[in-house]
Length: 521
Image (tube, rainbow, N blue to C red; front, side, top):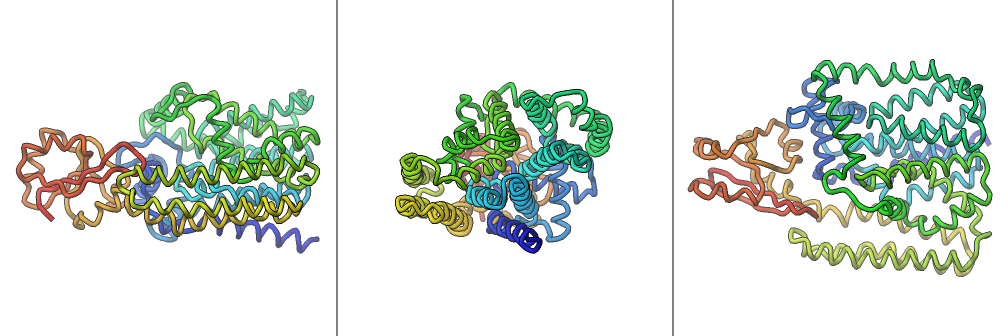
């Protein structure tokens, strides 16, 4: 048992990392969030500055520094590139699956824990999330590790886990701010209240004073330092703009009805979320203290972000590990469920997968830069086949093969997506299309607006120019490039030496990037 308990977690970690790191170095840093986070870390490393985050050498107040630190370490180890920017995202993704397995095994046994692992590595959305150079992979780990530590420390009366809880929560605050302390606190208080453990004796056992001191030692120094170095500007904008305002008002068009959050979770946890109703019923029926804790974790997070005015799919990803254990618990007892409900769920999954193929086909077809790549949508038929194989085995009441069919085909689809289906699309983004046209060491500026990924790849300050400066810039003797948007090209019309080298629509966005120069290529 000792050898088995050691080797299986290693297998879990290696497999998870293998899935979450598929082709992380082969895809461009293009999305706005990835570009800004990756470049911010690069600039901090370049300056040797551990305090003030900047993008394009201007103060960036979006996120605290924890993920920047890991990116900086990765840049030191592997150089500044796509692989380095994403390496620790994949690493923390694998750690998240590992601690979920260990946590589930501790209270529900190895079978449930292993099924939870299968559920998590089969989620395409989770894999995408752990592929990205953003703070979310780190936050997902710290929040889950913190709450898992609390549960172990409280229920087993182990103080070391309670102190670990405060340390991890402090690291979470250094990753994404107040959300890492507010929601875990609500979850814990609600858990204590529902289980009738909300007493002064239990509160004191949680070591709130020494714990708070430990939490502040971990999280406060950087906030004080950045406050002093930016005259309070970073702290003010981060708290009011990126937290309070983001919760009270839709930001960047990311709004929607409260049901959207539930949809995000359902789609994000496919393929096994088709059993989510059965899983909730089974967990509620068999509930014990541990399963109740998982339900509270999932419920608080889901409800909180359903009432938040800004809604994004990544906000609720921290519930995936707990939901994964709940689904794993259901799958371990799937033979006890109604046979018709199992079959209907798998049929529904086949329908969803087929709808996704059709939707992707027409979605790509109607996206001008990649309209000729609509055939790539047929790769997603892999998911349909997975559903069909699963249905075949479930009809024969071979539940093990039915579960494995859903998982294996979904994981295989992930590798196909990152290595075969998405790379051709990625090459069509405006940054990859325009970079070859920009001569090395030439002057590059921007007018009004531009794609932020250019800063990461050019690795220099891209200076803004005003409308009355365009003529002066274009009249320079050396070759000059101006990054802008198509909507602003009218402002270049009166200049005879303004040559539009390239106009490319940003993928799946309304913006259209443009590259202007004072010389023809």
